[in-house]
Image (cartoon, rainbow, N blue to C red):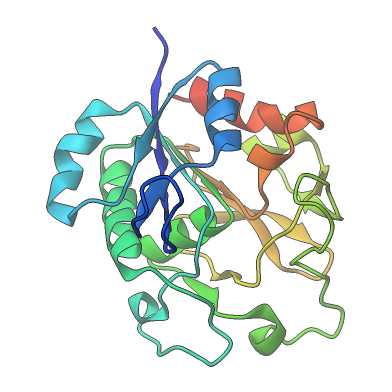
Length: 237
C-alpha cells in the first residue's frame, strides 16, 4: 500500500489572480512529484491550530517539511536582528508542534532547507538568523545562489550515516538559504557540511529524523541521485 506523506504548505501572502484573496496555501509541485516518483501518496498540510496536530499525525505515514520563510528567532529565545527575512509565526507554531508530535510517535520526517531549520528549532537547537552577519568564517561560500534553482552550485562532504549510504561521501547540491543550523538539537548528529563548515544535513540515531539544507525536490529530475533521498525516506516508514 502506498504511504501517505504529508507535505507542509507555504503561504502566498499576495492576492492571487485565481481567487483574488491573500493567504493561499500551496505546496511545491516539484515536492509533490518527488513523493509520487518515490512511491508515496502526497497530501498538502496547510498550517492548522496546534491542537489539531494529534489527529493529523494518526492519519499520516511520514511528513516532508518544505522550504519557505525564515524561522521566527523568538522560538529560540532570542530577538530578531535587522538581517532577518520574512517570517510566518503561525506556520512556525504549527510545524514545531508537528515535529515534536512526529518525533514522539517515531513518525519518519524529512526536512529540506527551512524544513531542516524548523526541525532543529523544534527539537531544541538553534539557527543562524543570517549567515553573512553571524557566521564568523572568512571563507564563507555563496549559499544563496543566483544560478537557476534546479542547478547545483557547491559540494558537501557527508560523514558515516544513513545519508552517506544514500548519496555517498560527497554530493553536489543547490543552495538557496541565508539561515542555517547553528547548534544541532540534542539527539541530532551533523552528517554533512559544506567546505566552509556550514551544516548541510543532520539525522537522528534511528533515522526517523533526517534533514538537508538544500532543495532535492528541485534537482531530482535532472540529478536522479537526489530522488534516492525521497525513496529512502519512504522506505524507512
